[in-house]
Image (cartoon, rainbow over the protein chains, first blue to last red):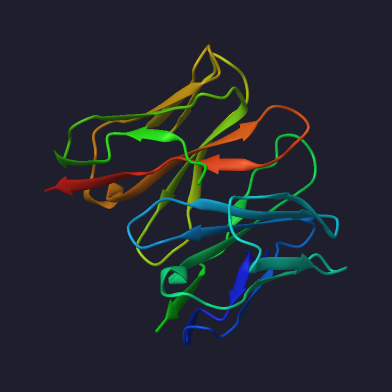
Length: 113
Length: 112
């Protein structure tokens, strides 16, 4: 069974540009979570999608947005990039139902210069 | 941002020693999870806890769901060099949402 896949693995952008990060969940998983992990720090909750809808959002500005497609894959968009957006962005997927927990991908390393 | 309090922040231990770390929250959780993250990788689930007071083991790892539902503990016995990494706790809020909040992490370094 394929795990959670994220692309690209690395992304370098210039301040002010936009970045798009992609996530494919494990087959059968309908929930997708996005987390930001700045260097040496913990995971900050960004967004949670389930069945195509945004269910919850962390304390991030509106320039962080995303969506979930009918096949449950997801995109995270970051507009007007700032230097402090440089981080590892982790996606996790989860199957609906109690007892199921998030499984993570390896992340996209975003560097803003 | 929303994060749980996790301690210690980092620790150096000798191979063979036991390790303890904990996580506390001001909120009540339905589920506590413990993950390990290796450099350049995403976190990998170690143990999941679903009931207050629950004590669960996975090999040399043992974790407990605090009876107040506001804390959790992870113990590693007889540490080995491959235990090196960052350990994160995560809590899932009470029913109605499957949002998970993570701790600040405990960086473990094992001296051979």
